[in-house]
Image (cartoon, rainbow, N blue to C red; front, side, top):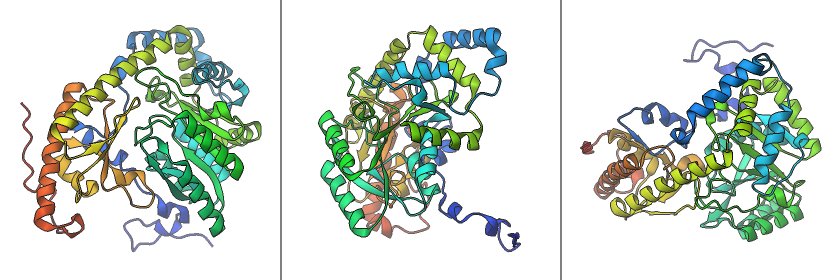
Length: 435
C-alpha cells in the first residue's frame, strides 16, 4: 500500500517519511549561520578557517594551469575511491603524524563528514551503540542520530577521554547486552573541548579497545595545527587494523574544496567505496586534482605553519580577553586547533541565553549541541579561528555584558528553568558600544 499525503498537516507528506527522519534536527552550529554571518555580529560560533592566510594568487594560478593543461580530465567523472594522484599526496600528509598507509588504503570523500557518514552507514544498525567523548563533535552526533545509533558519552578531563571511564562504559554496555560498533574519538585539539590526548592515554585507550574488540574511529581535522608545531603520533600509526582514520583538507587548506578521506583496512575500504559510489558516484575530480596540484606546487608545510601562527595569535587574544572581561567563567587554554571550551557561572543556561547574546551582536555555540543527551547547558564553545584579534576582543567584551545581565536575570527569577516562557530575547540587554 502506498503512502498517501495528508491534508491535515503543514507538511502533507509527513506520513510518508521514513521513521529514521523523525530524529533529525538542525545542527546548533549551522542554525546560527544566518545570524552570525551578519557583518555587525561578532561570530565566535563557526569553526571557519582564516582563509586570508592562504596565498590566493598561487591557488588561482594552480587552478588556472590545471584547467588549461588537463581540464577535460579535471571536469570529468572519476572512480569511487578517488584519484591515485591525490591518494599518493595524502600519504605524504599523513606521514607528518607518523602514518604510512599505502595509497590503495585511502578512500577520498566529500569532506571527512561524508567519510563519517559512510562509516556509520556500513557499521551501524538501529539501536547499536557508538561510544563518543562527552562532549563530542556536533556533526558526528547528527550522523549517528540519522542512522538511529545510540550514543553513549564517555567523560573527558583536561587531558581528553578518561580511560577508566571508557572501561566503565564498555562494562555497562556489556551488562545491558548492547552492541558497541565503535569508539568515535577526536584526539587532537578536540571539537569542542580543545584538548589533546597525551601519548600514554592513546596507548591505554587502544589497549582497552583491542581487548574489547572495539573499532576506533579517529577523526583528526586539527592534528597538524599545534601552535608550536609539535606532533603526537596518530592512533592509526599505532594500530592500522584497529583504527579507522578520517582526515580532511578543510582545516589544512580550505573547506570549499570539500575534500576528505578515510584510511581503512582492506575489507572496510571496499565497503566504503561501494557505499560512496551509491551515494555520490565519485568525489569531485576537479577538487581532487586542484588539491593534488597545489600540494605538488606549494610549500604546504610552510602554509600550515602560517595557519598555526595566525591561530596562535587569535587564541592568545581570546584567552587574554576572557581573563579581562569574563573572569567569572573558566576555560581550557588550548595548545592548537580552533576552540576554547568555556564553563559559565552557576545558574546560566547557554542555550536560553543565546538569543539575548545575538541581540547584543555576539554569537557562540551552546554546549548542548555537543551532547546527545541534553547535557552541556553550562558550557559554550568559543571559536577563535576566523575573527581578527580586534573582533575577538570586542566579541568577548560584548559577551561579558550578556553574561552579567543573565546573572542578574537568574537572581531576579531563579534558576533558568524558572524564567518566564515569554521572556523576550532582548530584555534589557544594553546596546553594544561599537566605538
